[in-house]
Amino acid sequence: MRAFLDSLYRLSGALAAIGMVATLILVASGILTRPLGIYLAGTDDYAGYAMAACGFLALAYTFKHGEHIRVSLVLERVGPRLRAALEWFSLAAATAVAAMLAYYAVRLVLQSHEFEEISQGVDATPLWIPQLTMAIGSVVLLIALVDDLVMTTLGREPARLAHAGGEAARME
Image (cartoon, rainbow, N blue to C red; front, side, top):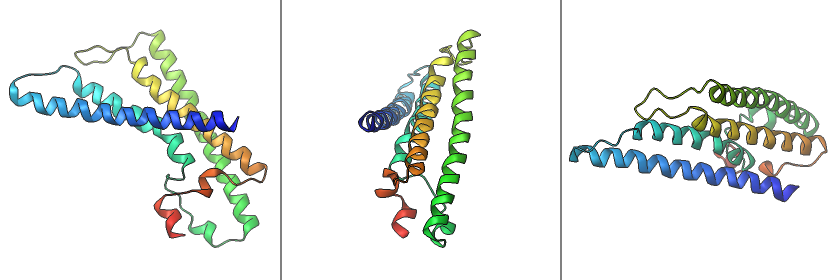
């Protein structure tokens, strides 16, 4: 199960990287072709979709690698038992928020598909397609938070704390 979850987080991170490269290509192509009098219809919209996909698909990967910004000022100054309790509480609260985000993101995709909503741009993209990456990213983040919550409840240190690479982790 651990290997499957880690693969899921890596896949989500890889898809986010593809979204970042797609954003770069779309924006660069729009910039480079405009002086030539060539307008690539829809590139602005698709660059926005790719950027949103990048942000949402990267959530779980960055969380599991300890790269999210954490305010650990209080955690540094309390004992290990209180620290563990506060860590569990923060994970439980984050899991609840992520569950709501995932629920409503999936619901939005289903409603957009059901009502056949399309973008207002020239391309008239069915909105459920770009919204799907938001829903997938939200669900994978929820899975990552539940993963860490279970690990913390069982008394094991989540991997994100073991190899946290964020700025806050380096300062601790």
